[in-house]
Image (tube, rainbow, N blue to C red; front, side, top):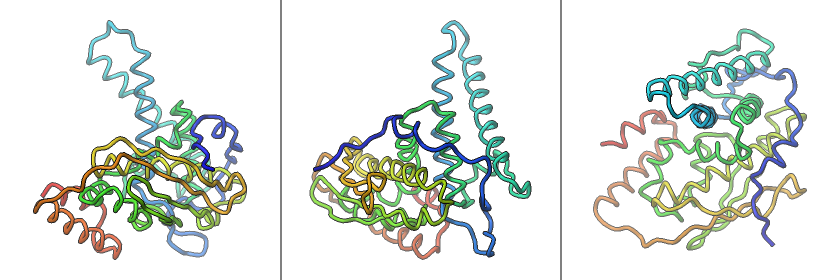
Length: 294
């Protein structure tokens, strides 16, 4: 029997508090000299961007109606800047070695890669600043970057879900598996061992909950990206936090007729070439936005 996905604050608010300090390096190389690249920059930038949008919406709703549009925009911009400043300040306070302290510009540059421990701290602080009880799910939806959308858009929704493991690997070192794809539905699994091994045991529950919710939010957007359909509905079939061996979700969406035409086939070929290049690390992610407009 399937269990409806839980996105409320009942779970997020009950997570263990973040420790005062991170145990490992947030980026660069770990203590053994190995490069840290568990979470890629686009995920972090998308996550922070969603938090800033929440802050901006809250600020806009609190402003009096009689102020000018210029004043309104200035105050909203100030609210975003202050929230970003708080995030950076709190992250740096949790990083013991000042060599790894970062700036807002560094954080919002998607060329960098980070540790899973750092991502957990980003998520925890952004959750508090956003004021959104569904932050983890919604920030996952936001992390579906324009680069990813350019790769999957020419495919059908079913093909998009079939590609989920390879697409996810472009942005995070994790274990996602496509179990089954049927017309109008797909079953996806996430196995957490690779992720939990990258963070201290004290953060295990946060790693599992945050990644589970974020991946659900991201994968639910595939119908919207591919075919302009509403986001998929999600059911949790299994959950690690409930004692299961993995998290398993069923995504269902409105079926559409396959698209045909020379332009579509050309787009499919281009996307296959881009996907192959990305998997082989031949093309930087930031090139995709430029290629997509050709």
